[in-house]
Image 1 (cartoon, rainbow, N blue to C red):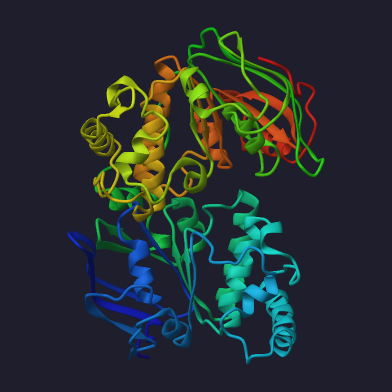
Image 2 (image 1 turned 30 degrees about the vertical axis):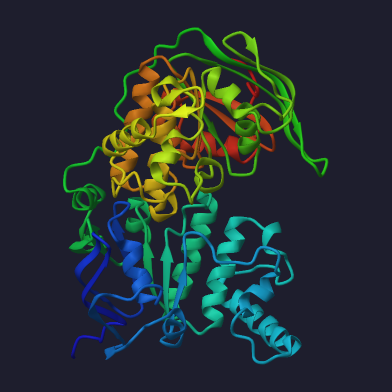
Length: 514
């Protein structure tokens, strides 16, 4: 029998943005009914390639074939007509619309919405049941979690009759449980004959869910594998071009004096819901305290209180001095006291996206002597410092004059991490440090965090990646429903024990201070 015709075939695709060659002579075959992974470091060109396939960009050269037929895709509407749907890393939803309204947006049957909504409601119900994509059609987008928002994006594509589904870093904003549910959805889609392209940097996901995997590096396609015939170390080496250390290499911590002392911390939100319920812990110089837990159990509120942007009651002391927890603390006051903060959401809290990279590198630290004195800023010094940090933290492209919004998510993260780690803090608050970051950058960021610890910094780490918590932390506190359920030494616990605490199983040592 002849080989099946590829669902997608790309031939010699090239795309440049000015002097930056994002894609160079790329060829790719994706077979029908398969889950095909595309991996590579941040800035490798993965998202650009898929944006060409979806019509967001036009290739400078090359040809696209869909089911064996040459197909011009000048825009996303052409992609949709060709049976292609795409779920972006940052969702394209109208937050104050309902699920139903978002699904039909742009594909209404006519000027009267009522018939379109009625038709969509029935079809949505059928799709949700068939593919395990249950979501309330009348829910407002801003009121539902990111896992459900992602389901809405998938439903949008299916409602538009997509047979080929592209997902760009789909688990970057999901908890482990939500990611597992997404994988079940993808297997259901595959079982119904859908073809899926999964863009990710997470090797565990590649090994778990894909049939084949293609590797990109610096804008070129460098390798193709059957997933069952490769391994994480081989994929990591293909991605980075060198052997990569997949485990965190660190010596035991040597804790010093207490740096952060938190007692009976409580937060009540604007709706009267208690988000933190009497949190107490102590963090020492030269150690990493990891905060584990499913997203939404108070970790974000804890970081915001310590960062000075959320009101709380209780007591927080830094090196013996009381911190303002009124919610009105100035960021400069926190930084001057020795606190650096890598926020969980780099785009809304860590960067000003329209500012150049060099402006973001200096953001919040522009009053320091290295950048000038008084009202006179030394812009040349800021730009040179940014260029140095971007080179040392391998930000791609290393162009300090490029707007922050023009960098990939992982490179945006490296800009924020470089700025905060290089400020030589006494206390580093770091939320989701490697969210959306590739394997080579993860290795680098982890090394920087451990190096900072070894120089005597106290580090409070919040991450939904349990593997990251286990490998980086010296001690681990688990949060559930606004409380600390228990605390463990990282070297003497495992994912199963922590998972029980994350599920709310009480621990006799709950909430004890170190």
